[in-house]
Image 1 (cartoon, helix red, strand yellow):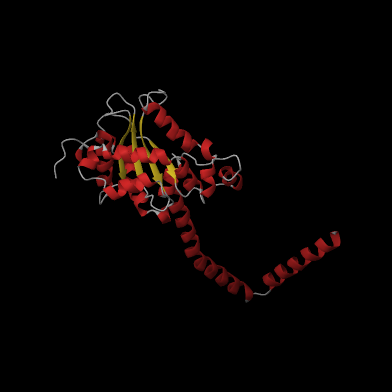
Image 2: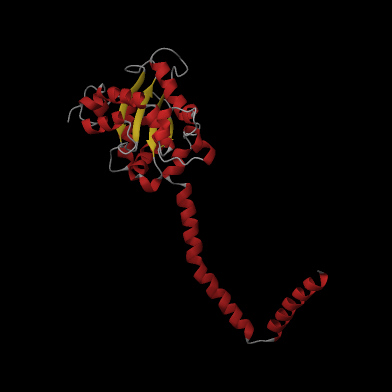
Length: 272
């Protein structure tokens, strides 16, 4: 082994000695290195840009508030819907005093509207707090409809003792919709009882898409506003909407703030 390492080391030493002793090679090496650096710069810059975009993407933002689908009927997402239901019916007070949005989102490349909505939510959390009448901090809980699960988690809804309905699902979110079909029918009913629906904010077709609990019809971002504060119109789901309207970040923030405040198109005194 020592002889082999010695031979390898001797080879590189000989090359280095030849370079030092051969004057005309050195400028060529310097020029080659310079051109190598120049040609490498665009790739390095592009790599840095992609890393920056990924770190500042809407997907990364929503992941901060993600409620996971892993665990099938025992997932955090299922438990969240259970908790909202129980609190709405008075069977629990675990959410008493809380107010938040449940937002169903997708990865950036699959949902440009999710990126637009992110700008509104983020602005309200940072610079637009004055737009919120109650002085509360805006809160989000996000569910990714295209969440990829580990193999073990994928098997959770396929095992023999799981809900038979789940066995028809191809993805975790489809299984989630099938398990909670009755809940989404209720959310559609909640949508019909809002000022937003009366003021032509959400369409009949969109309400039907929510009610269907069909993965092929489900739109993102679908937003449920949950309110268990003393000023809620009624405890539970108080607003349902799809997408965030507005040409600019501030417009989108004001749109979400109107939902939060039950004003504008989300309020009783809306006029066109």
